[in-house]
Length: 166
Image 1: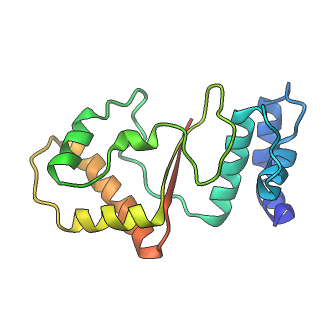
Image 2: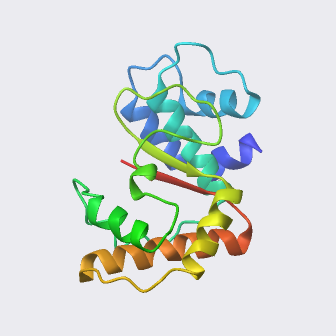
């Protein structure tokens, strides 16, 4: 598996090695440690978070995020208010933190990540299916539609969601 992922993402690993050139560890080695469960204490978190993104990309699928991509400094309040009014048990800010389905060292800076389990995805998707119609501005409506699409896609496949913000 490691070799397959390393070959598929060779250019990504090389780019990350350039970014983390002062690290004693290559991105390939960080990926190997994640897969083997042998990450040492006090390891540099950013390198591992980016290496884990290769695993996420290998096993998962990218979802449309065009409605949220333009945010350079996101203000989640209007979206979170709309989701609350829809009785959806989700806050957009949950994806703007550092949580993953595995334990990795916390990064000094970036990336920020978010993870929602498959069970929680199903709960949120079902809530969207029962959601009342709510008034919101066009940007918020576009973002909420995008978010609903994420949960629909993941629930249909029976998977969780992992997000990255860099």
